[in-house]
Image (cartoon, rainbow, N blue to C red; front, side, top):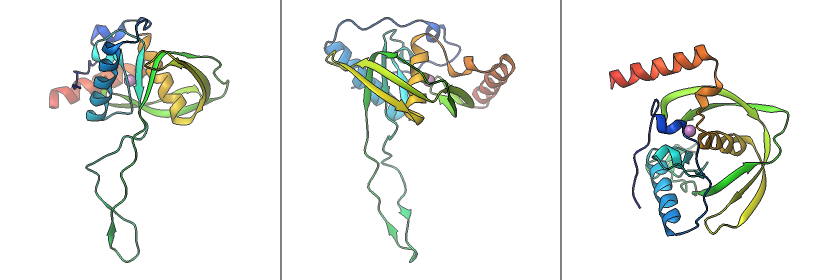
Length: 188
Ligand code: NI
């Protein structure tokens, strides 16, 4: 396993359309392992292969990354600190994902992206979707999704078409976001 470099805007590679996976081999498993390690290290809740420069239709998502550095939380009236179990990781891999029937009603989330660091903006997307994808062995799965999972999968699937969440914003808002990012980079 290795942490790979995450490409950031305006890297033109992020605009590439990713190709379907046809070989479910060890190389694919290594890519997925590296993507999880890279995502947890960042940290983020989703990552597409193109974000580490690999133009294949591969996504990893974990909405519950555990945080080993989390401070214990005081949860008691007596003021004693109790250690909580860290949140269990829920790694999910989506290979060649498709959206079958997005709902007409939408939900809005404040989205961010490891390729557009420090920038957050509200994006409207279908609230519910049915997703179909393959796992590391090539087996096909289908599932109804809603809430953050539906939004996150749609955000990651956009990456496969070379689309970033800021591309959903008005031109003015997108330019403001990119200017802010430029300023942050200069300050760093
Ligand atoms: Ni992203």
